[in-house]
Image (cartoon, rainbow, N blue to C red; front, side, top):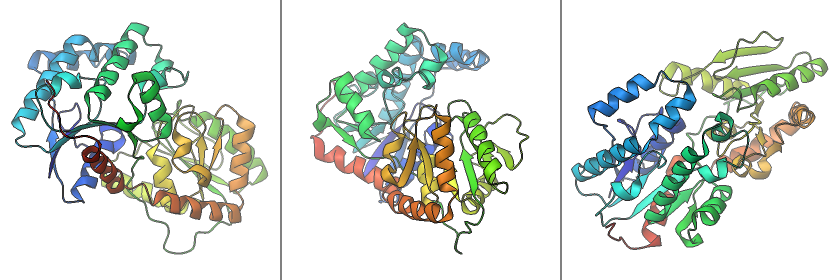
Length: 377
């Protein structure tokens, strides 16, 4: 079986794309014996030059420019050409559909197509701390992205999502019947629990979040300072694009890239050495970090804002991210070794059902069960 993997990048399988999600799904399919055919997007030279120049714009200007109709159409046509050059395909898995018109890109095809998302732009707009809302993007711009995503889901044979939270939006906001939307979960590359019994005599918290503000890093520092006053030996390791940190018991490691083996080895060591994982994001659709922490046997403090709480369910402590007292109480609860050990084992068992191979298997089986191939004309 040959499945085209579509992500609007010159290298769709790069681990740097969408927290490694396209790469993870590709490796998951390959583990099942499926041949994955990358569908790249090579913009025409004038568009590439414009993108290079305008990358210097502030985030708001770049995001809106990057999704202008001219760029969207250029990507769609480039993707269509890439699909035509890919040879025989049995199906396509498409992601990043807010950047191109999937309906135009797959025009004339007669193979099944699935999309995969962790949420919708229509849904993100309802949360003031989502990336889209926090940037204050113009309504007309965001409406265009919502429309692109809606068109993609309606054009596809099957719309796959990571959570029930995301499915509800695709059904209600995009008008798809439930039969054409499938919850397949979010995947991860399992970490490894320590080979020796974990030492819970001193609480050692771990925070891993690239976006410091949205991941609620400042609140974690404040809550940890409260914990430290009660447990002077407690420690906190911080990974991500964090500001300079000079607090007792806190060590900042900066950003650890997924495609740098040494950085990932350090991150693996931090997962092994920690006793609890804390990431009470202001908003998070489906954070892979929760699953990675759980697979290392760590209990997780999750957020109630977004679909994140579904990933581990009762195997995590979910807190309202603006409630500092609740966050502190959750961290204090996991400072107890017996509680941390018990919840860590529950999280480990829950994460075992969320490998990339399992997620991609659900997508492929759903894609070919849902409907026969139809011609996109």
